[in-house]
Image 1 (cartoon, rainbow, N blue to C red):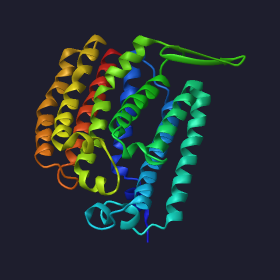
Image 2: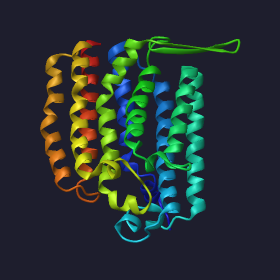
Image 3: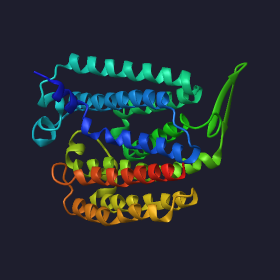
Image 4: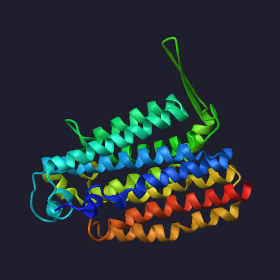
Length: 317
């Protein structure tokens, strides 16, 4: 019989760090850049974000369960929580509906607090999240999964987390009057958030890429034509390494923002374990043995940025 632990497995709670760290990154960035922190805004976004992240994962597992062609071996009985824990389909659907209702409720409350731009970004994120797992051709079954997961989880989450903390109209604004929507965007502030979020964007994209590299044979059997299926394993592994090195662009941005050079040394030091983890995964791409290195790289790259920016905000504050 399914238990709370099996529920956590269904929603893959261990992977939720992928949304929580960008949330933390945007929050501490706003503290550094604007000297602002609004606890209620942060709480509402946290509840909505986490609930919707759980929805997307549960939906993805449910869709894979319904569409699976290969129903034997490690690729099915072990990592599909619905089969592994004996979930009834109606129970999974009920879980998805309740989590979605929680996400929407908290999101609406946040809109009342932070403005209509949050609603627009929320609709966009919800739509991409649903299309990621459902529809005629879900994003997760296309070679665009890495791009969408990286941008929406790495950049959009960071952007919204910073936006809801910043002073009104400092980053962007969306107003409605007499049938017209009036959108204003501060290009410099958005660019800075994008560059600061690069490590999260890159390492989240690489979590998806590592997953797809590990599942290439099974994905072909289940009609999932992901990026590695198109470019081949050697090309995918080269891309896997290259994406990580791009993530260090944010060092120059942090320096420009006034972060002390000594505080940047921990960021540069992450290159040592990063290279070791890249090598370990590239030599033996495996869901069971080495996929965890992609997750460790994400926590390493993004987590260190969160700590460094938080310390810089505290020192300058």
